[in-house]
Length: 364
Ligand code: SAH
Image (cartoon, rainbow, N blue to C red):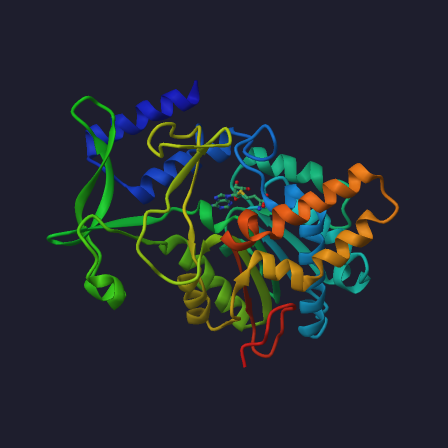
C-alpha cells in the first residue's frame, strides 16, 4: 500500500532530519510522486472526497466562459493569446468553458490552451474529457512554463492545494508550527525555532493570545505575483476561485477530507485531501505587486448571480422533465446559496490596465 508506506516514510524522515514544517508536510501528502494524494487518488465526485463547482453543474464553467469571452473583447480581441487553467481536475470546467467560447470563433482561433497539472493521472483524465473539444491542450508543470503572450487564466480550487506555513504565538514570538513525532511514535504538532518577523504580522493580530495560529501562503502568493506580472505586460485577465477569507486574520484553516468526512490532518497522509483556506487579501496584494489590477473580490454566490446563473438555469431547464429541472434547481442552490458554496467561496479577478472583467466592477 503506497499510502501506508508514505506514513512510514514521513516518520523515518522526521526521525532522521527533525520535524517538518506544516508546508513541507502538506507538500509531501499532496504531491509525493509515488504516494501523494493527487498522484494516487480520485478526489472528485460522489465516490471521491469532495465535489467541486464544475462537477456540480455545467453552468459554472459556462458562466466563467462568458466572462472570459468578455475579457477577450476588453483586451481588444488579440490574434494570439494563452488560455490557461491551473489545476484543472477532471477538465470539466474547461470543457464547459470551451463550449461557450465556440460562440466566438475568433476566440478559439487566437487561443493556445495550456493546462497546468502535476498529476500524470489527472492529465490523462483531462485529455479524455477534452477529446471532443475545439482546442487541444498542452500540458505544463508550472505557470512559469507558459509561453509569452497575452493571458486569460482560470484557477478554481487550485490555490487551496498549495502548501501553507503556520506560525504559533508563543511567549517568545510567532514560531513556525511543525509536525514531529510523539513519544509513542505518532505525529504531533509543535513549535519550531523559525520565526515570523514581527513586521509580517498585521498590527490588529500582533496582540493575539498565546497558542493563536497565523498562516502564510508564500507558494500561492509567488504564483499570483507571476501571473500579475504577465497580466500587467503584455496584458490579460485572470480569475481565481477558492474557499477562503477576504482579510488576513488568525486561525487554523488546515483541514483534511477523507471520504467526504473531515479527518484529523495527521491521520491519513497521502490518503486524505489536505487544503487550507486561501487568503484573498494576500493573493490580491501579490498580483498587484506583479503590476496587475486586483478588482474588488466578491463571493461565489454574488459572482454567479451577477453572471446570470438564474437566467442560465431557466434556459437550461426549459422543456426538460421535472426531475431534470429539480436537479438544475439543486445545483443553483449548491453553487450560490450562502449556506452552501455561495459565501465560503470567493472570486478574485486580476486584470491588466483598463481591462474589465465582467461581472466585476472596475477598480477605478
Ligand atoms: N479545478 C478543478 C480541480 C481542483 S483540485 C475543479 O474545480 O474541479 C486541485 C487541482 O490542482 C488538481 O487537478 C491537482 O492535481 C492540481 N494541483 C495541485 N497542486 C498542484 C501544483 N502544485 N501544480 C499544478 N497542479 C496542481
